[in-house]
Image 1 (cartoon, rainbow, N blue to C red):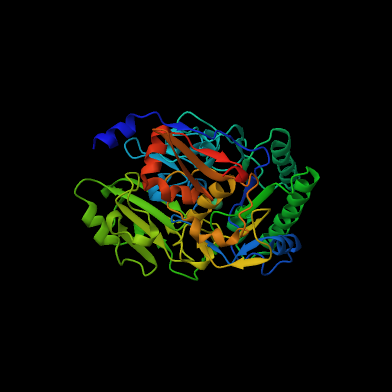
Image 2: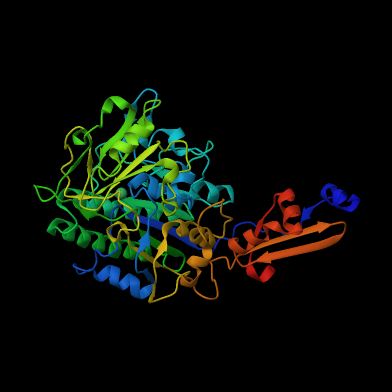
Length: 467
Ligand SMILES: [Zn+2]
């Protein structure tokens, strides 16, 4: 006991102090909003095909529920399920004032985003790396007082489908990597989500937009080469959700809450409705069971859940921001409030087990194997993979590196060759710990050495030949 106490009080010094290596690998994370996993099946996509040959392709990936833009992107950036990161909807809302803000305006509500989980930009910067973000959801907010070192937020009413702007933005992030020596950048494109909503996922307009995405992927890879980044730069391309065709014009019996016998908006103090296939209700005091029982079973394609009864696999329950009653519709349907006001031909927001909600995933670069197709995995696992490639210690998250590690080259040739190394001198005795990556380092958290290490609060990334 005496010895343990004295150990805590002892001089703990870290012997190796090599910081970030100059030749460590870089990482570009790209999201093409709403790019469904199978969008390359009915369109020629030579550049995406080439990327798969040169790297890794997943059959598909599973987004978190609720399958909408801001919540799902924040899962990619944090590795946390939505109930854990707290960005539970595209729309910020206040149930007391009944105020709501749409998607774009919600980007600027700091407390909506900054509520405990750190996006990878901040974690990378705290560990000595440089991070940037262009248009990626979450970019406009600060986190515990910090923002991405280089950030660009799109203006209101931005044209998300302009191919020339896509190329300019691609060149811009490549110059950030080359001229400002950034280690990590997240880059967002607002399509093919837009055309998927407007024309439907089976439309010629969607297929044409996929051709534009494919040309852009080719352009991005060419731009990386032009900027001299090919040997250093890893590129992950994925999306936040898929898209599903909405049935209308008398083909189906639409879901409109006001038409359900016994249901009254007077029993609610707040609601989020008319937002695709999902909805949330806050009944007035004493009205919860009444509203629930009225809606449950009222339409064969409407699912009604009390928050605490939500299916476990959706991970959409344990957060104060989630309202007491959650509604979602089967594919093909949307949920209307008073009367139908939604006329999109495609929607997302459905159960994340629906194949139409699954996004695509591709990765290429020095960290990744070549010509490898892997099975599906959840997008919470992208975060620990990114941390591993960057050689940074992840925050607490819901993903596992073991799910994606087989995509990486066997020698784990991260640019610095960087092992996470810790070496502490305690009472004249040097204790050395090394791990081949952040995940292994994480498992060492429970060891006495690493408790001491955490006391010392010093983790160093060492060139491989020094361990
Ligand atoms: Zn989206």
